[in-house]
Length: 117
Length: 112
Image (cartoon, rainbow over all chains, first blue to last red; front, side, top):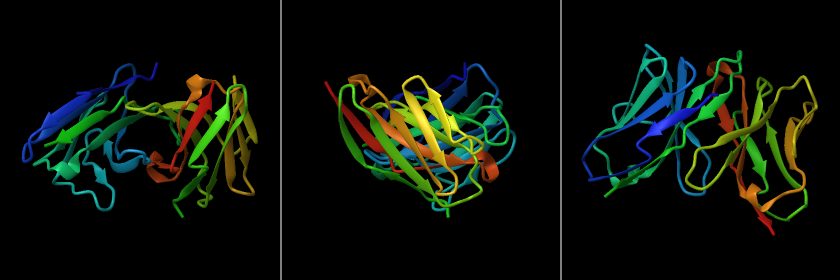
């Protein structure tokens, strides 16, 4: 149980284009999902918290107009990187919050590697 | 207040040995301390987690030791195997929003 998928796993795009990444909780409902980015050999950096049916909460320094998050259902959150540039190239990972109390367990997806040329 | 400090950054252990990774936190509001294992190119996978009401939790070869007064917790991997070679992240959570604060990670290499 508690499986989270991401699609696509790899994406290469040209500078200036937009890329959408999907995060799905496959066998449980998740009212809260999180989006992280991870640079090589570094830790996970929280970008935003996505709550079903409401606007995402972005961490300081993360441009909400550049990283659009939509959490339209209890099993799907999407991250759209708009007008992508080479510096946006990174490993993007989502997690879904399991329903195990106030300090719930986060289950992570396999990640999406984005390369912007 | 939100930092979680993890050490060492890298660790080399012989097969069969014990791997020990340490973490320290500042925020006393944290009440959930998970450890994640991440292989290259993959997402983190929950390994084991502990809450402050116990001082130790063991699952197979993996043990978390928790010292509430010192605000420290550690992961012990007994009988380390080459397949355990990965990056390990500690985290702390429990403040508003169920967010996790991650440590910097430890790259473990288990030599055969």
